[in-house]
Each structure stands twice: as structure tokens, then as C-alpha cells.
Amino acid sequence: MTILANMSPTQAAEFNAAVNTSGGDVTARGFGRRALVAVIGDSRMAQGIQRVVQNGGMTNRKKTTSIAAWWEFLSRGRVSAPSDYNVAVSGSLITDMQTQVVQVLAMTPRPTHALVLSGTNSFAANVTAADGWTQYAAILQPLIAAGIRPVCLADLSRAIGSWSAPASAQSQQFNALLIRNAPALGALVVDANYLLADPANAAGDPIAGYYQNNGTGDNGIHPATLADFAIGGAVNGTTLPLLQGPLPFVGSRADVYDATSNPFGNILEKVAGGSSLFQGTAGTNTSTGGAASGTVATGWNNRTLTGTGTSVASIEARADGKPGNFQTLTLASASGVSTYRYSFITDPLAGTYYTTGDKLQLAMDLDVSGATGLEGLFIQVLDYDGALDRGFSRWMDNAIIGASYYPFPSAFAGRAITDPLVIVAGSLRSIVRVEARVNNGGATIKIGAAELRRV
Image (cartoon, rainbow, N blue to C red; front, side, top):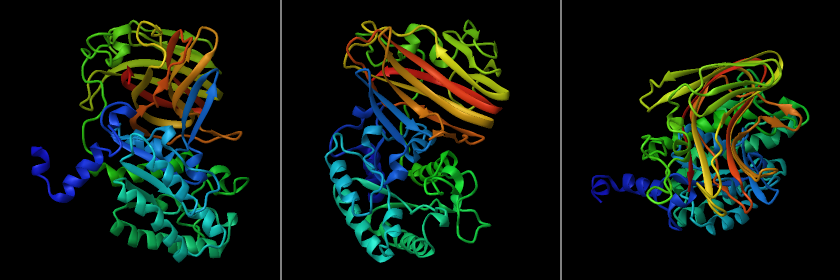
């Protein structure tokens, strides 16, 4: 390849790592050739996903507490971290990662990268930093030998009340060893602690609101939405220069689903022309609770579900170099909690656009600003049999942990892509939605470049 001939050996290796796997084509995991990421770790990684069988179908929830999901989103699709590639287990020690590595090596297609976070449980159990690094290096070596590039997170800050000063000191020393030694083995290292620790706190406790229960109950061990967003951003900033390449994106309205000539085309464009790029103004508003109003793109419905909040819709041409329009929803809920839904009006039908065993994947650009009290936001494709939900795939699940909601950042932008949804027997139609929840606040949410495809 000419492109490889013009690269240095290091650049060529990075290029190959980004677009190839030794176990199969990355296209098998969804839209286009993307870096395919496995996730290894303890509860701080395991908490980011939920996979449950529901009425015979699988539900996939990528949560706001998923570092990998934020990395995906902020990379705008250059990264794919499927839920079934997350093998993290709560309570794991560093030595327990060996079992997870075996699982990763058996994956087909084989991942290009592995996002790794471990350490805190070992240091809480009195493992020394030196022993911890020796154990950790033993995890990295088989991954690297198999052509899987580890992306190693430094052990994360946690509230001092959740363990001890000696354990914290071993964690700090381990991070120094990781940063010094892991790159020589071929790993990337991301230390996001400067984004998490409160600079005014001598013990290095997390910034208020960044961790679950903020020092009580969970006791400041597990990052919440704001922290995971920050960590995902740090990972994206480190890796993005290595992952430049074609992005999954709606490039033209001519990319329309056709069972014969374009079976992987955009189903939304086929069902209602213009819907993928938010053309036209023939959409509708529905006020079930509160008030929905404004201009809605053809094929879509703007709806207030519960509470007394408002959703004002408008359409604006994109000024970011991407095609089409943004559907803008200005949400406000001044008196308590309000929920909102923006949905595709005409559900794609089974037997017409897909059949049992097919996989459907949904993607949209999301650009959020001015968010206060935004406690939930997700895109979803759902398999419906006329009476029951037969599974769904969602990015991201509402920011609820236990009984507590944790707010989204005030501003963020990227591309949300669900895991592929496997259609089960008895499916009648698929339902495409964006849902939000606001508690005494508001947000401006811009939606662009929507695609629903068989993958």
C-alpha cells in the first residue's frame, strides 16, 4: 500500500493497529473499520454496562459511568467498545486480570486495543506497589504479544475515608511505576487523576460531585458521570492522533436502504426521506406532560412525557462542516422533574427492512450545551412485537446509580452509537428514540446525522 510506504515503521504499526485485527475484520462489530476495544478491570469498569435478557431479546445499556462509552462518543466513532467486549469483574485484584486477558485473547474478531484499569482492590488488600506492577506487567505482555495495544489507566483517585493512607501511598507509587515502565512494553498510559482529585484536599479526595455518593455510602470509591466523562476525554485525547481515519457517518441522502442494491443503507432515510439529515418541517409536537412546541424535522415527533417542562424545537443548518441540519431541542423544567422523548414517527417494519437474526445499529450526533439538572439522556433502538419489548440497545442509560441521579456535564459533543441489537423471532417493528430527563434545570440538545442500519 502506498500509504504505508510513505510512513515510518512506527507510523505504519500504528496504522495497522488502528484498522486491522489478527482475529477478523473490525467491520463485524458495526459501522466501518474502527478501533475495537476490549475492557479489562474491576468494578470501576464493570459498572459501565448492563446486559440482560428481556422477553427473549438482549438489552444492552451503555451507562454514563462507562469510561469506554465516553471514549467512543468523544472519538466520534473512531472507537468501538461493545458491551460484550467488557470482561471486567467487580472486586477483581490485579492478579485476577489474568483470567480476563484469556477471555480477550479468545474474542473474535480480536480487539485492536484493551482499556485496562486495576489496582485499587489490591492496594486495599495490602499488596505493595512493586508487587502490583510486577503482576500488572504480566497482564500486559500477552496482550501485546497478540497484537492488542493496551491503553492503561493509572489507578484512580478515591476518598481517603474509603481505605487508608498507606494504601493510597502504594497506589501513588504504583502509578509512578506504570507511567515509567508500561510504555517501554508497548502500552499507552493515561493518568486522569489531575482531572479528578480536589487540589484543595491534602488527601487527594475526588472533587465534589465526581464520585458516587461523594464520600458517603459508596464512600468515594467509584467515579460517577462527571468523573467518567473526564476520564473518557483524557483517553480520547491521548489516543485520537493514533486513530485518525474514516468515520461512520451519514454522508449523503443517497445512502438509502434497499434490500437488493444497498442492504446496509440508512433505513431512516428510506422510511421518511430527509429524516437522516433532519430536512423538512413536517414533524409533529405532542404534549403529554408539559408543553412541546416549535419546528420539527419531517419524520420525527417532539414530545413532553411527564412533569411540567417545555421542549421547544427548532431546525438549524449545521455550521461544523457536517451535512444537513441539527434538530435543536431547548428543554426547560423549572418545577421538579420532567421527561422528554424525540422519536421517529414511522417505525421500520420487520420483514420489510430486516428479519430475525439481523442486527440493527443506531447512531446520532449529539451536541449538548447549557445543561443544568440534566439527569438522563440516551438514544435507543428497541425491538417490539406489538405487546412486549423484545430487547433494546441504548447509549447512554440514565445517570441513575442506586436511587441517586448524577448529572451530565454542562456541555459535551460527540457521536452516540448503540451496540448492535439482535432481532429475535416475533419482532414486529423497531422503535427509534431519544429520551431525556431534567430536574429543575434545562439543556439545549442538538441532534444530527441519524442512521439506522443493518450491520
